[in-house]
Length: 95
Ligand code: HEC
Image 1 (spheres, protein in one colour):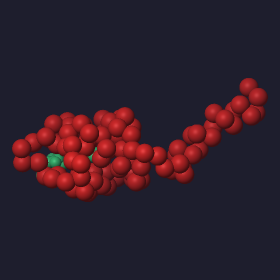
Image 2 (cartoon, rainbow, N blue to C red):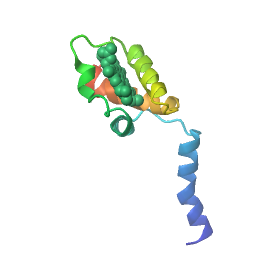
Image 3 (cartoon, rainbow, N blue to C red):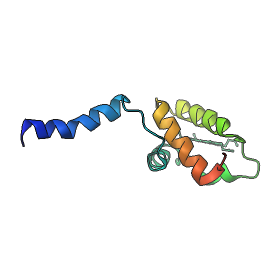
Image 4 (cartoon, helix red, strand yellow):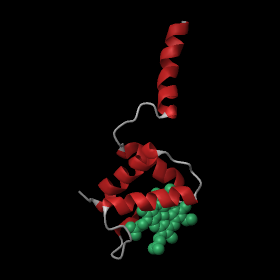
């Protein structure tokens, strides 16, 4: 492979991992993160309980922050946004 072609393959990895290219929240990335790290204890059904804890988008965010910290995942803003987006689209549907 030509050196230039190799650089093209590497660049997105560098930018994505550095968070330099902040992106719009992605439901698919959120789903993957959630399935990898959060379903050990609960499925997404916990977010649809009648007496659910999160009653606003801000509270969904707070709770996701709390759980990722509790799991020592060191998620950045992007990861938290992605999971909030996933949960809100698939469960909470807050405006
Ligand atoms: C160690 C087990 C455990 C892990 C791991 C875990 N959770 Fe939870 N989660 C719970 C329990 C238990 C509850 C219900 C708490 C309650 O009812 O007081 C909960 C509730 C929640 C709620 C609130 C649901 C509601 O009522 O609206 C959110 C949001 C949530 N978890 C997100 C996450 C996310 C995101 C992750 C992954 C980063 C995660 N959790 C990982 C155990 C866990």
